[in-house]
Length: 217
Ligand SMILES: [Zn+2]
Image (cartoon, rainbow, N blue to C red):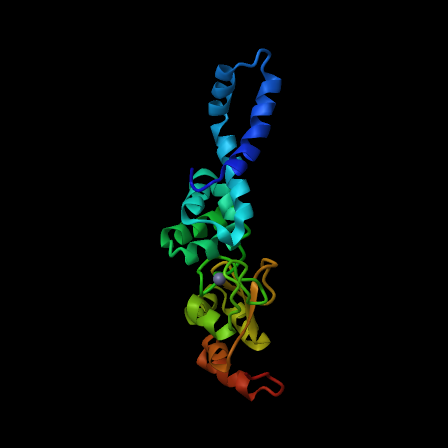
């Protein structure tokens, strides 16, 4: 069964059956089987959790078993299962894991340009695929220029504040000025000279250039 060996099956099934035997006043095979079938989900989840112990060794059918029978466990284990899915070339599994990670795992405030999971941390490393990302790669991936435009339209004063400070926070699809509340997982993104100018009108940009002490990237 799904390449699960007898020992693992026995280890998972035994405590469940013993539990049932203790609960049933006159245990007989029939009543035990009925109870096991009634607790099938519980049993399948137990098996899925045990399969995770195989780590990188997981076979493709075992990966499928976990995804189908224990989506919550799969979501939490996405950093492990992602690598298993990639090794097996199982793109459908990668897609499924991406959603399960967002529902049951520990999604961060920013997507990783490499694996596209919401798993990029404030130090620009990815919890799921393990990549380290440069600021430039991240900016291109999320389309920072158009996000800056949106900030400028949403809150012109905050856009000026961000341009003067020289950085913004990327928080779950939104660009926020330094003084705005943001998630502790938001990414601090330093702005290039061109990006700062993007946040300002032509007049403000000229005024800022003539101001002494203004930091330029
Ligand atoms: Zn990644």
